[in-house]
Image (cartoon, rainbow, N blue to C red):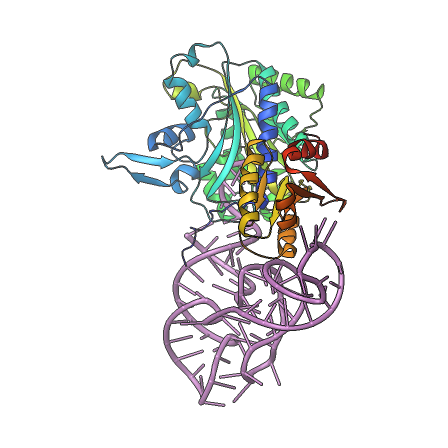
Length: 417
RNA sequence: GUGGCUGUAGUUCAAUGGUAGAGCCAUGGACUGUGGAUCCAUUCGUUGCGGGUUCGAAUCCCGUCAGCCACCCCA
């Protein structure tokens, strides 16, 4: 039997309800905040992600699905959305002339990682990007928007973490202090942290090894290294949040894996998710547009993992989507009558189904019930010759006989639509 | 990429190295034109795959593939 590749899912109808709940809610909230949808390609020239995410990031060095097209150019299935949105924004002369440009996207992303809970090779994200907004209000807006989406979908057990990682002017001082601090205790570091010290010292701060926890206590704090601009920005973002419904926790150990972030970073985390505890994250990236050849444009954005949100909503009841009508017949002429009636009722806007097989009433009613039909409409020999239908309300069990030529009006009265 | 655990019917799971079973689901019947509750019956397997040990392997060993969980890292 053929099977799907590892880390890639088939999503059957029983999961579509919750999936739509999440994406519909996100779309509603995006609209409330005046964000408009952009549909970005599922693949890009590899260079888009290399330049966008940073040459040394894990995603670029080992997690991309990359292949050559027939002309020998390197293409990559998108591992995230921001790089593509920035590329599209810079490439499009009309949108990048706007003072501010608010966009959102949704769709599948691809990363060649080992699958585990809340981590797939093909997974879905929605996210938003705001270009041309350097004011701390916009950081707040992006964060508050995701907070609204989480609350509206029914996710309640989560924590919003925020931090500032400074800018190219002040971060190097912090990284230098951090490197010096940890170099002094190199012999105490776990193996991963030893290599972090070389590759990406910021990541030392969120090591999960028990042995590394005590070392963090006296490590340099980013807050004492922020330049005036970054500090004021950070305070202002917090002030906005404090006046809003979004409760947050400041976490100076929060760093992000992608190179493009400046100043604000944030994460929505939930312990129920297990090892991969973030279901949404983002931050400010004031230099990325320039990196893509655009004019200097401050920007801020976020992305959310739809499958991770689904895990958090597992217990939430989603109303089962049933059909309106199921036609029951006895075969032959009654089936012909049922088929034409079925077409007519569908044209009238009622979701309607029937079983063309010549099975007994019992199995047809059983099927009607399993399909969640509200009404069963029986056309047997008696009804056919009398020009009537028997309409049974499957909830109450109540049954009435009506003339076929007024069936639509009868259904309308029963269903109220 | 690294590590741990697990692979048996559509599904959830049993079976001391000795004839592969049960619940649920599905289908049919009790109820010949009426669903959901109850009762009864029926179908379903190269025990993931390939080797090895053994008189004999679902069971033990090796390999492989897949799934789950964790690390790295990320949504």
